[in-house]
Image 1 (cartoon, rainbow, N blue to C red):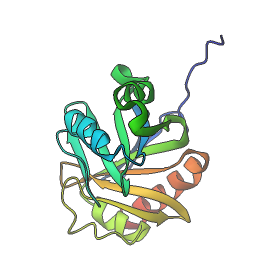
Image 2 (tube, rainbow, N blue to C red):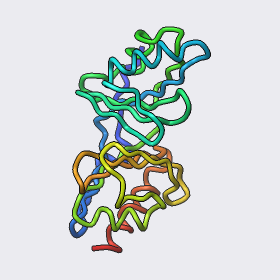
Image 3 (cartoon, one colour):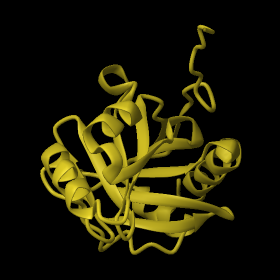
Image 4 (cartoon, one colour):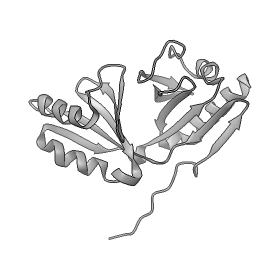
Length: 184
């Protein structure tokens, strides 16, 4: 077996522009869960035990070390710290069995955290999410710089998490930096 080392999409870049800090968050393990026909109840029970609640439409549920957000009917993205859940997809498969299809997503997405006093101004330039009325846990699927992304409002008023396709990490990062420069 090969001894492979995971790499960050952009090398763990952090940029501070004015009051905004943009950080590539490479410390997350991601897995998607899609309940199979007849496995909806078991999937919901497992997710409720793991997250405290099953995230509904437009919501992210944060609980302990894990978090999950709704992607569609009976579909969720689950995230946890890489240090404690490197094999998150395998752990979920063990818990869910045949009730759901679980797919490793860590290498498919890039995660950026944008924080700072002008974060809302920058997000308004990036996409059409109602960032000023979003509360902690609100999640929107949107388009940023022609890329399908998820925008998650975090627990503090000046923090948003943006998840986009890893193959376009450079383009997404460029868009985030350009928006930060525009409001700086």
